[in-house]
Each structure stands twice: as C-alpha cells, then as structure tokens.
Image (tube, rainbow, N blue to C red):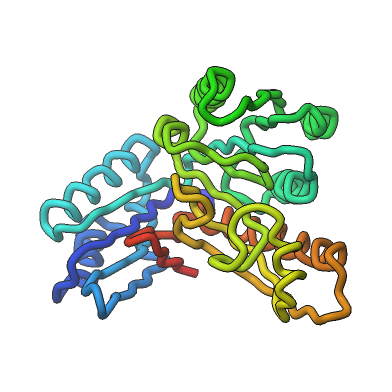
Length: 291
C-alpha cells in the first residue's frame, strides 16, 4: 500500500471501553482502521491490542509522525496504556550477527533480497572471517570482530566495537543467525535495541550448547527450534516462535542436525517477520503475537 500506515501496540490494565475509545480517536481524526486485534490475559488482567490504520487522506510523512505521537500521548494519558507506535514508511535497519554456520545467514539474506521483510540488512558482524566473501556477494558490509574470553579486556573491546558498529549503521534490531557467542548483560544494555536469537532446540529443553547431541542422548521423539528475544539469562528470553519435527531411534545426530536446520531457518524467518511488522508484545517474559 502506498499510503503511510500507523501501527500501535498497546498493553495495560484491562478496563471497559478501550476498544471503543481507540476506534473513536482514530475515527475522529479521519483515519481508516485496516486491522485491529486484542487479547486479555485473564490471570493478570492485562489488555493487549494491535491496531493498524491509515491516517486521513492527504496526510504526509510529517503529519503521520505527529499523529503517531498524538496517539501515544492519548493512549498513555487517557487509557493508562503502555504504547509503541511504528510507521510503515520507516524501514527498520538490521545488524546480522553470525559465526561460521551459514544456513540461517543465507536464508535471512535471500528472504531479505526477495522482499519478504519490512526491514533492511544494514551490516553483518561476525567473530570469524569465514562468511566475508558471501556477505560481499550479497553487497552487505561485513565486519570481523574477534571475541576474547569472557571477563577479559579483549572481550570488552570486542563488545565496544559491536556497539559502535550498531550505532554507526543506525541499527534498530540485532539478529543472531546462529551467532555462537553469549551476549553479556552489559552488551545487551548498551545495544539499546531488541535482539532476536535462534536456538536449535525446543526451549526450555536442551538450553546451552550442543542441543542436538543432548536430544540424541535423551532419545527424544521431537526436536525443535526456538526464536526468542535475547536476555542476560542464556536462552531464557521471551519466546516468539517455535516449531518441531518428529524423530525416532533410527535418526543419528547428523540427521537430527540436518532436519533441525530446516526448522531453524523457518522459525527465525517467521519471528523476524512478525517483529518487523510490529506484531509482538512482550510482558512477564512472555509474548503476545498478533498474527
């Protein structure tokens, strides 16, 4: 659609009339609601809503920005909601963090080239130079940032460089496409943007390293992949999306790994798509995903 759209994500204490008040505010300003969905957590008594609308005809970029700010003020002051408003004419910029394993790296870049994401891959950051040539073939700036051991000056310098690069490229989101390093709490705080990770197991089972080997040793009948927001607690951040595949005793570790990689690609892509379309609300280490 050529007309700019506004998307608002609201959350807060449930109360009568929220939907009507939101729709009335948009209608009074001449807007047209394209999509609206809501959810109530009956245990916590929290209300969630996603509403997407086209402002009044003839609204330009600056007026669209002002309307988004006005809506946020309305939702905060009059409804007592926490609100985030995004615009369709603003394309988020993404930093892709990778190591040596290439399947999620290639999948994300190919999908981005095909126009599947409302976002732009601004740069690639890696702790190994392995994928430099591939990145250059995609025409994406590649930065090799070696990582020292945790707690060392080398690690601190590496994290400072990662932060600098994300700021230089004006990054709105970091995606860990099988980036095989643990991000420290300090780095996550300094990045100041969401970080999405793909973990190669159906969390909370088999967190940490070598999950396919753990799954094989346990004799599981399902393997999975989990996309989640990264937090200081390893593999315990809010889960965005998961999928599974049935396996049996005949499947080797290498077969589990091969099948798991297909899951990892599709799960990461879907989570990235939902985030870029402003469909995810996080609360109490959980997510509400409006599909």
